[in-house]
Length: 265
Image 1: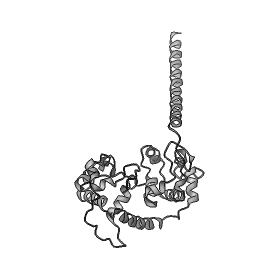
Image 2: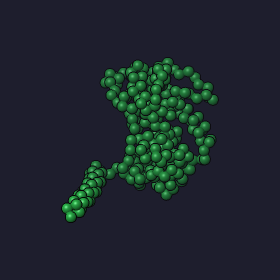
Image 3: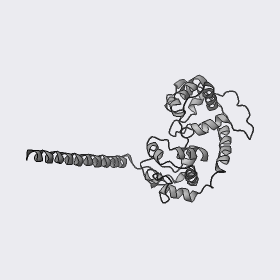
Image 4: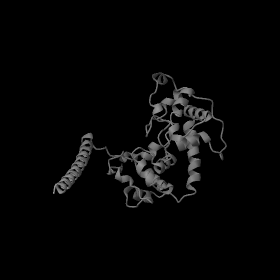
């Protein structure tokens, strides 16, 4: 998952005036020859789509459709705040990304570049296999570097864990194969990152998992457990942690008492 959030919280505080305007556009992007990459679309795909869509759909960050009405300078400021995630950005890069978000043809540009990237990318890998992906998700097939199976925290069609969101419609929500492969491989989410940095998911595993997710019917999603059930699970966890700390404290107290008794003798 090249999940480098270029436009995180800086885009959340949308000025009310921005919604009063109709969609705005910038000058059309220059035509890109079919055999040459659209560099701005490529940058958006590899740096932004793990967390953002060009619609109002939310991923790890907000959808960027409302931001398309913002002035370029305001978008540049919001993007620049995210340099801590992607490294330094030159002014021309900020302008290019801001104008891309405002371009009405951005979804088409993104789709075309995604298809080119995917073709180049998959040509170097074994063909995607949904059966292997299902095994990696459920844990019946281990990840190469020993990472936890997805089902330890996530469910698909009601099967799996409930610590993370249900992933039944994740292929459509992420916008297709390329951004989803990127998001899985990088695992750059708060809870996931520490574990998968030590046990990275390979590109080939991400391809198989993505193929598996692509075969899941989004309508097969199952309602999440009630807040009461989740609260009960959380309370049980807290009680267990509290009991562990109590017993540890008791052992330490008994140890100190034993040492004191020996000294008195």
